[in-house]
Image (cartoon, rainbow, N blue to C red; front, side):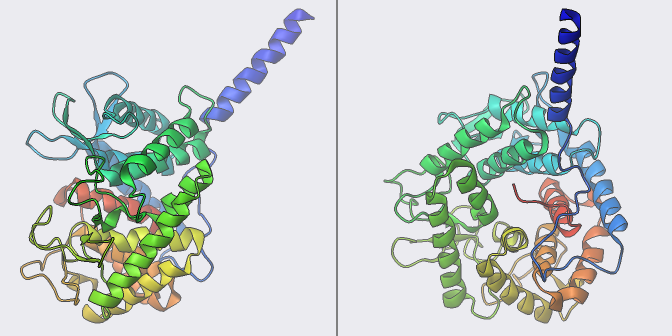
Length: 405
């Protein structure tokens, strides 16, 4: 009798362990997006899935690297210099592997290894990741990069939905701790705008400035749901208002948002040249290029009408300025919608988000089909970590395999 009882207890434990390891939303998941939104329809669902899986396999082989400590992985920044990993890439990698569960037998091991690397490189504020690491896996700088932290936290919520939190890593608790740290150190409590880094404090000159690509409304809605912290609703509302104001005041025709916005507490304006990164800091450049993707995913997963208003304006302009030919997409624009001089080359970090943006309305079907074909035909070997990672995340959305946490 005792032997039978032990036998049944062992079976129950094995079943619970197995259930905790098996993905609940395995790829391809074929999520249901907001009614009226579209996907590429000139090819079938199987072809969309296969293209995404094929590119994932290439991406993983090139960018997932074994770290200096066993059981840890990082996303390779793909440079020959000192910097080998950045938290932005770690966030991309953790989101990708959570979304691609069952795409390969090692995907959970990969996710956990990426998490372990993040955990080993938390900065002085405990749950935020130091923004960059070198070849020896040492932190180059202990300050954080807000966008990386937000994607990592969201990926942990995804991991909880995907595998549960009863295994060796309690994904949900780790996510909650990180979300609380993000709110404390990377959100301005006066304007509920998004701070560039935890290194920016209340007396810093850039305390009321923001990087527009850090606005990830679908993430923030999930953060509120996971923690019950209603301040995240203020972050969503205030930043949607900020974006609408910037469009109306500085880009009424194109609907474009600049890389950086300054003076949020007074009169928000695009940043001046060389505010932080380049002479194009006040233009639609290599940060803001992610905005259409981030905003569109909010519409696709939460049906927020504010997201559609933003993307509708962008879609009208990009179709008109390119004459419906994706090959005419440039790598950067002024807020008036003019090409940045000398940027007449293909950049997947611009093409991919414009493609996702088209999903919000059936009027864009022909354009969406054309930009999908254009996006997927580029070879991974011809582009860098940034372009290829954004391309893959966008393909996951475009193929109908992105889901809200």
